[in-house]
Length: 78
Image (cartoon, rainbow, N blue to C red; front, side, top):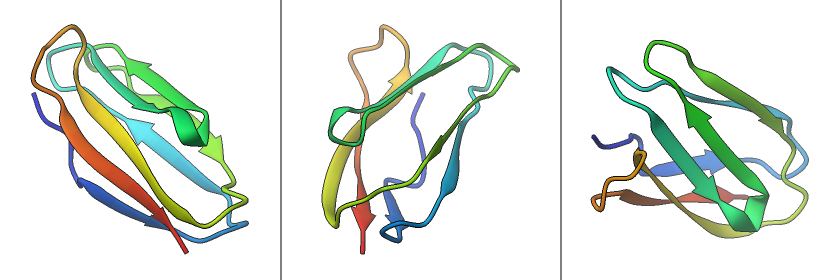
């Protein structure tokens, strides 16, 4: 029920596709400072294209939906 990697490096003004794929459970990923909120169903990935426009470290939480144990990580935009 964890997500990896816990540190994701991105480049400012570079468009990337973020994919969340849960294995056997519904997963969620939330990075409010980047406007990112994804939820995937078992065996059905969820995708979102983003283009970060500012640099910094943006925290996220990710894990099985409804679980109290969530991976805490960061998007680092350079």
